Image (cartoon, rainbow, N blue to C red; front, side, top):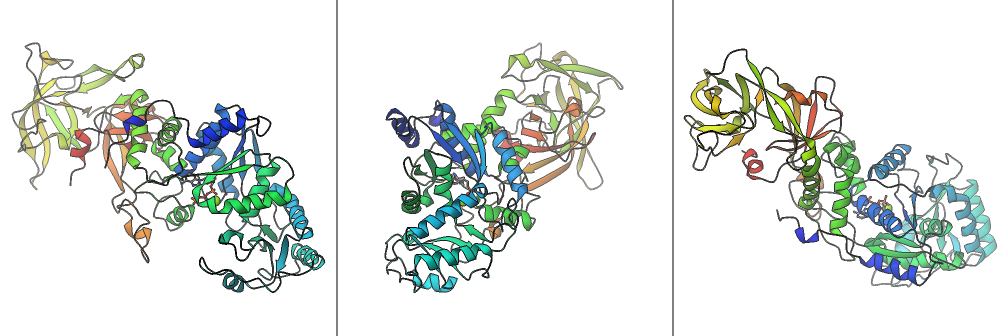
Length: 565
Ligand code: ATP
Ligand code: MG
């Protein structure tokens, strides 16, 4: 895995979109106005790719005194749902953005219909009665022009009559479509008389059964932009070839000032799928626990995983906005959250795989409290008291009976430091009948309290620990990538992204132990478990039974050692 690009730090450079916007503002192109929109289709939850678009649209407007609308692009009733509308609003807010206005494309159904009638009246649209299959065949190919439909030259009156009857519900689904009359020989397939309306009897989550015809995205989108007086309609590159159609709709229906579509490269992340259709499949077929499963690249999944809005915005600023497609390393996303949490997450001690340690020379029944720094990156975070006693737990991986070369942690006869407490030396290894190590007997040096030896002798390792009598049992969920290959969609024909799911993407540890200060932790509180990574309290937690998600590991040797076979 390559390292995140550190050179990307600092204030965001002015990308090509901001350059265009600045030029237009300076030239008073839209009377000096700036209006953008974020137009999700409510057919799934937002993902990190949407975050890029949100940061761009809301960010540009905020920085340059413009407005940004949230618009639900709800023109396809069969896939859309109010659950998604609500989740999208929540996620945009959580990311730190507020919209200047909220709209639904379905608010415009009546206006969109009127515009279609206008097109028919201008001789720019017609009702086609070919079947879907025939329409496909007549469309031609990239190398061959299409063929005009035999219905292309229907009279305006006949078209008006048929279109009104389509709306009135006189025809079954698929019997007719309304098409733009552009050019069946255009080298751009999108201009070969694209469909504008189709008949579809489906209950819409907002308009119910009021309509049985629904507008197509390529028609509804430019007009929605125009109705809202959007100045810059920012979208991803795959719409570049649709831009002539976008402009065609505006040219024939909008007088005066028109929005400008500008395309940018979508965010692609390695080891990740981002298509909503595929994410929905993961949810519906229960490969994950839901849209907010902490392994999902959704905003709700990242939130539950422990990502902060700041870290996601920082990530989006670092990757920037460009016109060229590329794949970003997920390590960059991890870098952003590490950097954020390093500054503000309180440090605590927790042991994931506990190994019992008895300090044979420590008085039985005694408890003392050692002072531990809460956050070395934040002096104002202060210190806390952590209980220490005769019986402790350390990490199993911090002990080796037969230490390999360069293993500096605990082994028989070796001395190490327990963080902020004492030096201890292992004197005996206790095993069960199966020969497994169940306990270590150690001595501690009372003169090393706080972690330093008065005689100046040094140890090579400092380990985290918890006091057995005070430890809080917690569940810890460790996550790995959801997919085991860099490009889960790149398997070629016949390959299925589900075949490259990582079977080890979730590891649930039931026996972890945490220091008692965590008893007060609330859902979504974030911590650094010393040496283990950043963790966040999961919503599955109940009083007395906390569940922690590991957001991300620390980028040190321990993280590698801990990923043992
Ligand atoms: P998907 O391919 O995941 O289904 P979509 O483009 O169909 O996504 P929409 O709800 O239509 O999803 O997207 C809303 C906005 O977010 C659009 O303007 C779209 O261009 C943008 N967007 C979607 N995916 C990405 C991405 N990966 N990177 C940047 N912007 C994106
Ligand atoms: Mg879309």
